[in-house]
Amino acid sequence: MTDAEDRKPQSDEARSAFVHPSGLMAPADSESSTTSEFALPDGLAVPKPGTESETTSEFALPDGLDVAPPPAHEPEGSAFSTPRTYSARQAAAFTPPTGVPLVRLTKDVPWQDRMRTMLRMPVTERPAPEPVQRHDESGPAVPRVLDLSLRIGELLLAGGEGAEDVEAAMFAVCRAYGLDRCEPNVTFTLLAVSYQPSLVDDPVTASRTVRRRSPDYTRLAAVYQLVDDLSDDETHVSLEEAYRRLAEIRRNRHPYPGWALTAASGLLAGSASVLVGGGLLVFVAAAVGAMLGDRLAWLCAGRGLPEFYQFTVAATPPAAIGVALTLAHADVKASAVITGGLFALLPGRALVAGVQDGLTGFYITASARLLEVLYFFVGIVIGVLTVLYFGVQLGANLVPDAALVGDPQPVLQIAASLGLSLAFAVLLQQERSTVLVVTLNGGVAWVVYGAMHYTGDISPVASTAVAAGVVGLFGQLLARYRFASALPYTTAAIGPLLPGSATYFGLLGIAQNEVDSGLTSLTKAVALAMAIAIGVNLGSEISRLFLRIGSAEKRRAAKRTRGF
Image (cartoon, rainbow, N blue to C red; front, top):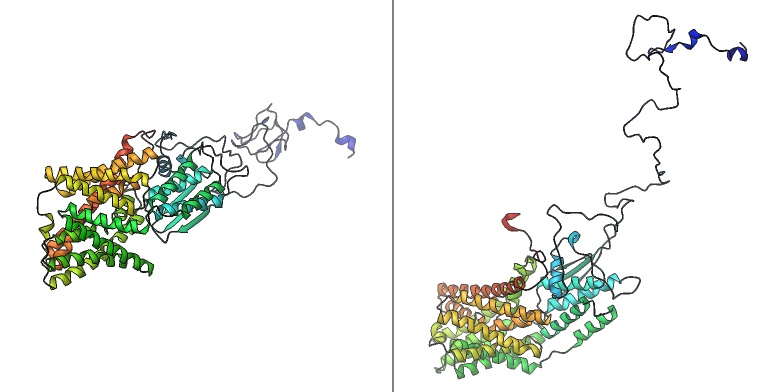
């Protein structure tokens, strides 16, 4: 057949043919015995095959929609990688189920409150960092900023500051230089800080170990001033300037010489002996015993002995002088002499810091601090019990109630409480500008205690707790007024409230084989110590509640009640 014949128009019969569902060609006028609903009706235009896919889907793109071509190479995605269409500046913020908390960090509150507030928030709910003006155009040197925060935290922790305040200071230093995604972590001997630039970058972590502790509140106040300057937007402190000031703080000598510290130990012990009913001779005997114990402790420290043995050795001279006066049948209250010597050794500072860490959620640090207090207390017990045991064997007539016989003398006892707080402040190496204030705070504490216990006939534990709460309240107010730490205004002021007499009576009862009465007195001493620590912390928290701090949602606590 030729090409011309192929191009001839086909007959009507051929044009009317259609495709049967079975695939066979059948004429239109032929009558099929079998019909189907899938057969094409007459007059329906059938598109040519190949112009449209036979299979369609609701996910197919309609005609006329312009779609950008896919990239040539699409990298393998990850659950931790951000989508390629994500923009941190244009993305909408995630709203938690409980709503977005209203947070207003005002500039007229201490930096401790602002940093503590943000530390208690999740990272996703923290406000944007404040304007940073203290680093060069290339950005802050992350390792150096972390090192600076660790060095500042080391000085604060070694000076006796609480773990929460140390974390707040470290976080303030990091935010001052633009590192807002930081997580400081403080334990009893280890400081660590981690910084993660973004969700997809590797974090940078640094740590530092605190091996020695020395209570120097002058250095503590200088470190607080440095952190306050770093947190202030109007004060421009570069990294080099911050390192220079930190080096000066480390090199500064103590404000008081060694002989002044020894004299302060004697004044503290003598004043404490007057508080429990002693006279002039008792004052002198207690002062001499405390100064001898202080010199022996310095000698042991120079020889490298641990603090446990230093406390044991320092507790023996006051007890030995009291026993010697009793054996000499001198008309003095030997119990008051020994009690005064114990006041100079009781670790009230470490006890308050340990209880404060426990109340604020730092349980590991609190356990370590309280264990340290327990070791110091055991050292004191061993030293005093050794002397009392030999004294009882030699026939010393030690009467436990002799120190408390007689009517209270309010004027003399208030003067003694002022002297005790003054001596305690000197031993803590406080700034001279704060000594007068903390001395008056200690006098107020004893007035509150005496009014409730002696006049109102209230239990000593409740009276001590209320007096310690007043100390914590006043100390926190003074600290906020000066934008400084509250420790210099509270630690020395609780000196008159320390349970020196209860501790001595418990030890004496055990030495005289009266274990039941001895344990009762020691339990009372522990209760008084806990009342002091909880009262100081509660007073500080009350001051924060009633002071203007921006918003009620600003300083939230952890929800751990009822087991969830």
